[in-house]
Structure formats: C-alpha cells, structure tokens
Image (cartoon, rainbow, N blue to C red):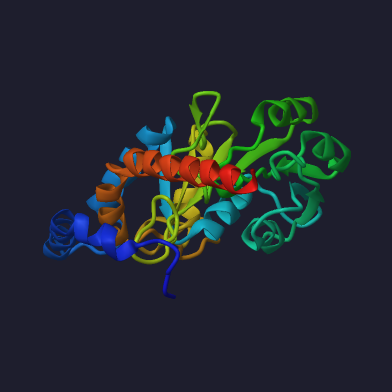
Length: 269
C-alpha cells in the first residue's frame, strides 16, 4: 500500500546510511525471527514510553487483541470504546468475542468523553479502551477514576500517538497497558506492518510474549493457544534508527501545525 500523505522517501534519503547499516546488520546476523535486534528495540521503546516492558507484535490491531486476550477478556464481556475512532479499536474487542460498547466523544476534543463512559459501564464491563486520536491524548485522569471505581482495566490505543504526552507523562504509561502501531504512516513508522504492547504488568507481558509466538517459550513446547504475531527484526532495526529522531520529527510537525493554524486564522479574518 502506497503512503502518499507523508514524504517517506525524503525521510529515507535523510537516514539512508543508518537504515542501510541496520539492514546489513540484520542480514549478516542470520537471525530473522525474535532476534537480538528485536530485543534492543523493545528495550529502547519501553524506556522511551517509561514502561517496564515492550513486546513487539505483528501490527497495532494485534497489539490491542493480545492485551485483551492477556487479561482474559472474551465472550460475555463488554469493553467501552470510543464511538469516534478507526475500526481497529472495535475489531480488537470483537475478535476476542467480547462486545464493544460505544461511548460518544467530547465535542471539544473528539476523544472519548468520561461522562459517556460512566453511562456505558455495566455489570459486564471489563475494560475501557480510550484512543489518543490523531495524536491528541484522551483525558485520562477522569477515565482512570472511573476504572478504579468499577475495577476495570484501562487499555490505551496509542496507535496514532507515538511521543504524545498527557500532563507531562508519555502516552503508553497512563493505563494498565497500551497498543501501538508502526504502520508506515505513523509518527514512528516502519517499512511495513508492525506493532507493540507496552506495560508495567509483569504477568501480562509474560502472557503476551507467549501468545504472540504460538503460546511457546521453547521450540515445540506450546503452553497455551497462541498465534503468530511477531514484530519482524528487520522492521525493529529500522524502528530503532527512527526512534532516535521521533521527538525531533514531532517538534517539526507541531511547528507546521502552528503555521497552518495561524494562516487559517488570517484567512478567516
């Protein structure tokens, strides 16, 4: 799929030497699944997000699905989701057999409204799944208060929000776990599909590492019913390079956004 809304080719030209070195390192290693390059990226991205764990997975949808499965959420359960979001948020819930329950957005931000979440919570609710839409963090503190009141998990869909902050805290460290996408058009994008789960929950991290790899820690020893959803080491190596520039690129996006907003105000005047 061609991504035309970002000048990815320009980015590639700027980083060509570093990306070529990353490619050659993976090719020379002979390890193309669950390699040291993947572990290095997982450590770097966990550190960046301020979490204990990062588990690289196949894509952003899988990241959310695996979190839900890791928490045992499935048929008969409900998960409160934004009415205004990309379909992957809802699909993650429905793929587990649970029911997505929509909550309307706050008209000021278009992110999920905590008042609407309160109304959507029922006896079957197991989790709240806020989305940081277009990089704007959802208002997390009121959502966390609702979760504590009802004993619910809070799972961040941070697929569009790499490097965003809420009250000086990185998204990804605000709830119980978060799912990220590394689709090429994201702020931190690979050269193909990819995703990750970040969390401080040791038990969840261990469960997801099993689930992403056929339920196995050792070859031919399958402990649970898992699937094949592993972040490719080549993509991990590319992402490690690009992660070093993420804050710089985000700052540039903010500068351009301010310029657009300023010019639009002039036009309206």
